[in-house]
Image (cartoon, rainbow, N blue to C red; front, side):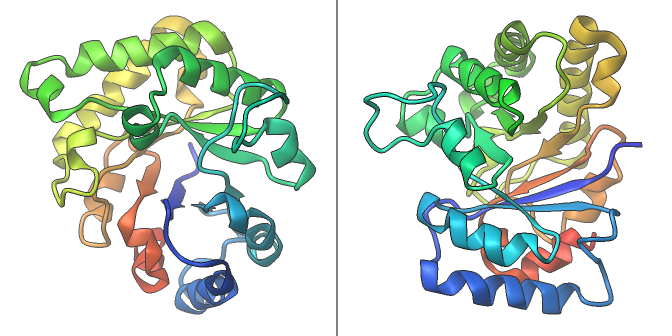
Length: 251
């Protein structure tokens, strides 16, 4: 049985001064519903880089996980503005997003660079949440499976048989648009991703968690989580409000 993981991605939102109040409010909203320290579900927040140290101090004492939103594949060097895996580890952080669709779209991240980032994380005991997904044009052209296979095989060629990562399926056409894949569409994509994993790493595919990301809200999380291959969610805008995010966590 794979433990559910509900991850929130703040993207470029909130302020440093708002971090403590957010986690206090989240704990208040979850009281009597879900205890982050009880082991029923992993609750993670990917926060902007300037907040990482404070968020770790405030959140992890209450059982929440904190992640970076991206990381560089190199351990050090002349890469102005980037964050390395050793920097995250030195701060006591063990999670990061990798290859979010916005990073691919706006910052020219490729299948190869995403795979390199995932490999660097795994080699240094930081868990990457590797994002994959098709655009609306690709879906309408019937290319969903081809795109997912290409993205997954790039990662698998880099990380081999490791299962020390998480996959997040995020149909790009559903991110921030208000559109959401139907429960059947989500399950179909997740099952396909797991079949690709199974073909490469056998039974290890059953251990890997696959999250759904794309306009996840409290109104649709329950149906999504009933799907056999949906192991959690990567939540964008709805994670900015601790009250709404708590309802998603308590699916």
